[in-house]
Image 1 (spheres, rainbow, N blue to C red):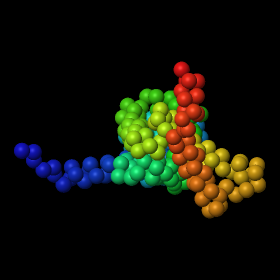
Image 2: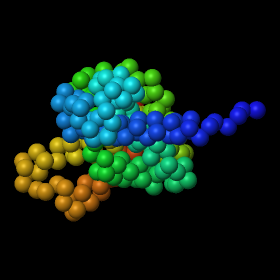
Image 3: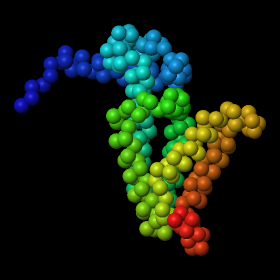
Image 4: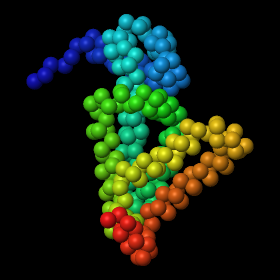
Length: 229
């Protein structure tokens, strides 16, 4: 039978977990603000309230810390998605919920957009080396695939939709809009972050996705199938 750990050991472990969490939180903030190239480890340590030696004890330099920060923002969105309970909803309601969640998460977490944009500028080299990336994302694709299957069986979705392609499109409809909102607002002389504009964007995203998923008329479906052969 395992012996309970002494209070001192538990306190040390809690302190270590707290320090790691504070460093990671500060890293997300600093990398989102300055990007990988512009971020400074000194600034991250200062915001975390730790000395630089402790930061290097937990994370292997700036590159390793950026990789950890990137994994953490992906883990946050995947964890939040897992709590959506899509399986209890009708297929159309579940897809609408996923669309709404994606836009809402991007709005609430601009640091996610910033870190992903930064990683793309670096060719996704940190994500390619991640040991947890595939296991983090695969359940989402599996859930969407099951959701699409339910929709096909109910006669409300068309068959043959790739779940990964669908998710990329959902994410792109929100990601492009928000990551370019300042330039788009300037170019088209419209405040695209105004409440009315965001409501319109949400409804547009819903209709685009649901419109794509609706079953095709018989003749159109046969013609598309012939083109794909």
